[in-house]
Length: 282
Image: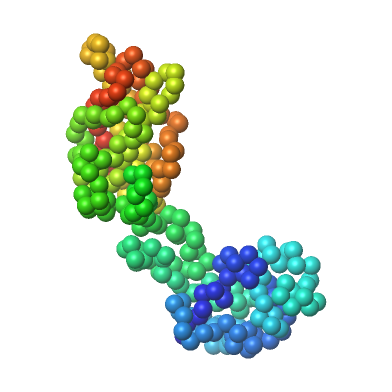
């Protein structure tokens, strides 16, 4: 048995229907006839239509018109489609049907195998590990997900656009002062950005973010050091946790960054020592 997913959306705000649901009061058999469709990507089990062997009865709009709670509260006992006078009450049958329906995640093509409740689909997709992020390189519209970035950068970008590194091992970074960031790829293909913010008239603010989504099994930290070009014995250091972001979109961390004064480094090229660490999330 299949069901058209559009019929599970509020016909006013078009958001997914979630309990409590309200309809004008009539019979349930017309309700079932109204929503069941033979060809649709969502499945509806016959067991979900029964409780203790009997069909669940509830309230049904005479013409099949449904409203979610927030929209129902503004209807003033008028059907939003028919404009007929209506006495709205909760439709328990429809609520149980909606709650029982399972749907594939929108990011199934990216590798997510979760079958989630229709009412919880939006919540799941907000934290789905396979939700794609947009490549931060200007002009590139590629969308990828955590752990699958190296192939894209090797094929579609110049080697100067990114740098590979090994967790826990310090490495030197040379960055043009005018560039807003440098792409860093971890050994497990996590994508990091070394961000460079020109903080006129003070200097350059450096920080590290990881482009990823969802609740991952790893947490990251970094150590960054800048040595004076005039006196290498003088240096500035920062140890901080890596900030997570789904998209870069020009945003930069504000809680932790290393501010390097202009007279501390070259005006055209910046040299930094960086180390990124990885540990299991508790």
